[in-house]
Amino acid sequence: MSRRSASAPPIPVHVERGIDEPLHRQVYRELVQLILSGRLRPGARLPSSRMLADELGVARNTVLLALEQLLSEGYVETRRGAGSYVSGELPDRSPQRLRSHAPQPGRRPRLARRARSLVVPANRPLPARGLLRPGEPDWAGFPLALWSRLLAESWRAPARAMLLGDDPAGHPPLRAAIAEYLAAARGVGATAEHVVIVSGIRQALAIAARLLLDVGDPVWLENPGYPGLRGPLVAAGAKLVPVEVDSEGLSLQAAQRLAPRPRLICIAPSHQYPLGMTMSVARRLALLEHARQVNAWIFEDDYDSEWRYAGRPLAAMQGLDRDGRVLYAGTFSKILFPSIRLGYIVLPEPLIAPFLAARQALDDQPAVLAQPALAAFVAGGHLASHLRRQRRRYKARQELLLGAARRHLGGLLELGADPGGMHLIGYLHPDLAGRMDDREASRRAEAAGIAAPPLSSHWIGRATHQGLLLGYTAVPERQIDAVVARLAKALSASATDRPDRT
Ligand SMILES: Cc1ncc(COP(=O)(O)O)c(C=O)c1O
Image 1 (spheres, rainbow, N blue to C red):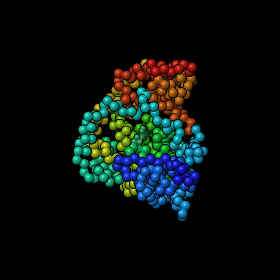
Image 2 (cartoon, rainbow, N blue to C red):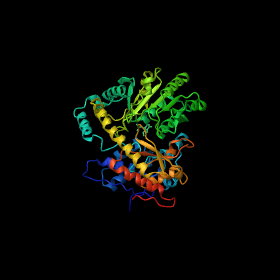
Image 3 (cartoon, rainbow, N blue to C red):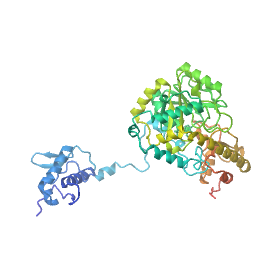
Image 4 (tube, rainbow, N blue to C red):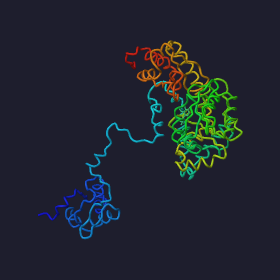
């Protein structure tokens, strides 16, 4: 007859001999598993140590050691003269109980109110594979062999500081190289101390917004604009004030009517996204003056000013700032490759220490891994030659896109040249607009393997224009005509036709 009492059914504990793990550790681990999986429920009685030892064929001391550990960690409790029990304090994790709490399929998780603006279709990433994807650099033109050499060299004998990565502002030689590059190329007045390495412009804004904004503070944003800037602001509790743009950039008059005292002004003055105008000097000065009067900050998003194909670009607005109001942010996503996840922010002196403190409170600098190679790439003049080569290529591709559009897109999309950037806008021709909106046009393009986002999705609220963003930088010259012909076919099919990929 079994010596086991009726209240303690057999417990499926298995131990293995001849492995590294001591037997008492195995018994302990198995019992923890049974408790956490709910097979041993809170309050359940455990067999006596003698019984368990018999069952497992181990010494009683082995079981006692395991029970002691369980006791000290609070998994089991002892009742005087009545043996050991699974602690009644633990939550009931039995399978039946867990099932009753299982999420219902299709049920939405409860999110914070401010998260609703983060989880919106406008933030949907572009299809990874489509052609004409805006913002995608030309892969073939990236000097990969040089890049791998710089990566390898920079890690051959890394200094202790590189391994520790203990400078919250980023790898010092990279900061110095960026300061020098920005002074020469963009007229930015900064030393290495003002430059902080970030994972990109959005991270720069995410930290700046938490640093500078209280919940509900108004922030002027260009409308239309880059949807990626909304998330960092919304997450900081900002009140977005979308402001229309005219041919000179963000309309100061309209902005003053909407919210005369912004706390922060977010603009891309070098090359408005997605429309492409450059903010006039008069508008820049007026904005700086307004910011001074109402004590606002300006976040200058200089995401792609390197891509300029005609004339010299206007210098950055930061260089005009005499009052320490401009936070200037740039990125390597567009000039090298997006997954490098490295960018920079140039801060006014008084913001450096608070910015670094805030970044350390939230996270730390991005991985140091690629920073030394990037420093060598910038300081060694490779960035400048890469930009020169790619500018020629992108300029040619833009011209080819315009030519192909003239041949194939008549009555569908209307394109105009842009002296810079990585995409052109194909505005919906009235004939096409009579048949579909730009979201439908974008869906049709996507079904044909073309990743051309709708222009209207760049507005907050009602869009005033309909079009498609057509990125030309990553499409090899010889393919451009065929891709545009394919786009034309997808758009001219009647509403009932199924778009095809041939
Ligand atoms: C206007 C604009 N600003 C900022 C960014 C974001 O840059 P990052 O990848 O550095 O966050 C982009 C990227 O597409 C952009 O188009």
